[in-house]
Image (cartoon, rainbow, N blue to C red; front, side):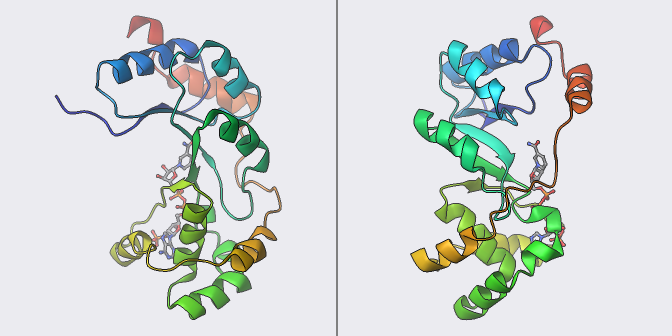
Length: 187
Ligand SMILES: NC(=O)c1ccc[n+]([C@@H]2O[C@H](COP(=O)([O-])OP(=O)(O)OC[C@H]3O[C@@H](n4cnc5c(N)ncnc54)[C@H](OP(=O)(O)O)[C@@H]3O)[C@@H](O)[C@H]2O)c1
């Protein structure tokens, strides 16, 4: 039997608690090495916490130097849930990638600005899933563990943390996710 590295729920939509029960079952049966949640910010993580039998190992949420998830991390740190960053490079936003601090650090370490941003994620303790359709970028994005940003450099990057997201989910969007997700009760 092939086991999945990570199974997680994309959105807290529909009967997501029934879905989470299925993840717990898959984990117990050895079908998933890790289970997680995504976009369960605010009230949802607390609601899940009241009923979970297995603590999710990961929460996948938008995170990048402009939005470092300060509030959520107070909760995830308490439960030992690891953050996984989506839109880690700002969905390709040039204004993020070309921030002067990243250009300077890229020059210092002989890396690209994107590599510096990805290294920042790992040093924040985040798992990171950059998207790319470019073979050179994909190779670069894995080559980020041979340099270390100093505490002062991490502090400089922290100054970019504006608490601004690229994507904000609306109630309407959440209802839309519920409509196309499977009916967990029938699974
Ligand atoms: N759970 C969720 O709700 C959720 C929501 C959104 C996204 N995600 C996931 O998050 C992951 C990343 O999302 P994303 O791809 O939209 O955003 P991203 O990783 O922040 O940005 C991707 C952009 O960065 C560019 N890029 C990648 N590597 C680069 C490099 N080394 N140098 C320069 N530019 C580089 C890419 O261009 P090139 O193609 O030219 O490299 C692309 O334009 C995906 O797996 C996605 O499915 C999850």
